[in-house]
Image (cartoon, rainbow over all chains, first blue to last red):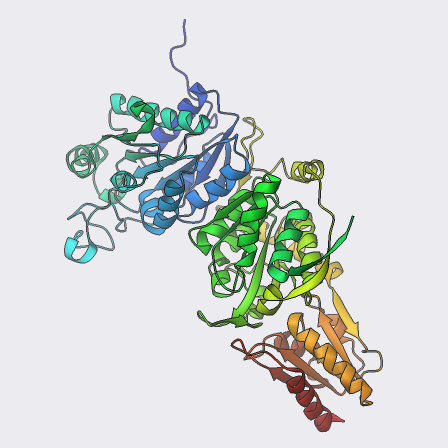
Length: 249
Length: 359
């Protein structure tokens, strides 16, 4: 019988992800492996991992990896990519990591047009530390540090990372995707692959924002989380291409 | 191979690093060390190296962490309050056992302090350069020539131990010009060979199954084993103690000083000798590991007093001297701070005061 699907070798064999039920991190790891595999880059892949739930990925990936301090992944990746330019380098960061404590590193790496790929997982909350408010938390959404819900008078408004980066000249490719349906998983995989491809071509900075759910810290069932994701998160963070300099040509 | 040139301390530091095979530098502007990044910005393109002006000290030290984790010889530099921001990255490098070199061209703190020279970061350099109780070799040059030699050596020490190494200097040496003999330039082949030694650990994209992981920490109960390994390394550093004993053999009065203060103290020791006083100087060349034994094994029937000469208020190295001496002789301080330089006269007067008290 013909094998039509097999597990990517980009994640360790015989390993089961420890991410919470309904969390999309495991899917994202799978499609990173698939995208790198399709480009023949699994033996040339470097992961710079942020702090938070994204940091759990180190136990599943089957490629070189380093752990950056909270927020510093884009600085660490700058040092790595500049020192080993032929390696395929990506950062894997959550919203607290990338958009709060690491905002300077993210913006500056993007502004320099560093030639690596950022995979930004936005679930609107701090997961690992137990549900604190993130820069991306929706208005009215409850968090342990915003128990009455995010109040714009006090906490400001949700931060739109790809749109902010779109103000800079250097970034080459910016897209927002999700993993809520098989179709969107395919789109997310293609986006990651495109970011990797551009890096291999030396085009510079790419960021793929993946809007995901966090049933545990949203306090919702996995199915209700999907509903919340599609109704509320996508309304704030519309999916789609923000910039693709490669397509403009 | 060697050549003698007239160079400013900061530029000599940068050139020595290039000659040692450093091919990555990241740093952020701060006085009085700006000539280091500026020199690298000009020099690195000539040797196919990388210079990055980081968006902050925090970013720069994390770029250093990333670059060094690929096995390339990498360096950064900053000054005092900038070095405070290095704590995070340095602690990560110590935890993950990444070889890297960084330089602190000290100014007068705490806080933003003064931009003028001082030795106000001794505790930070030797006791707690970041969280977690790690240790580093800390080299403390007292001439521009030593800046050159120590930076050159620092890369070898970092590679030997797979641990960060700090070169602690100050704004006097950073901005002063002196004639120096530059070390030989390592060839591209030598540099490639050095890099190869770290290849198994390098974060460069290995084949599946042979992957390298750079982990500045551990999960579950694994961290204790990491800390035990690090402590094992630190326990081998007795061999790395480096100290100069100047005219101490018959000395009744010892001036203790490192770095720039030692240059001033040396002049005063010579003057006191001319005046018939049996004075000498102990100069820690590395301040970590500290030469405790040199102080502890002094003949306290002969040595009547020690003068700790330091450009820091309050005194800091005094703590290590006291730890070694254990009250067996009187220890006085001679201090300036906040960018005010010690003078020969001030150190001389303080030595004379000590002599009056103990002889």
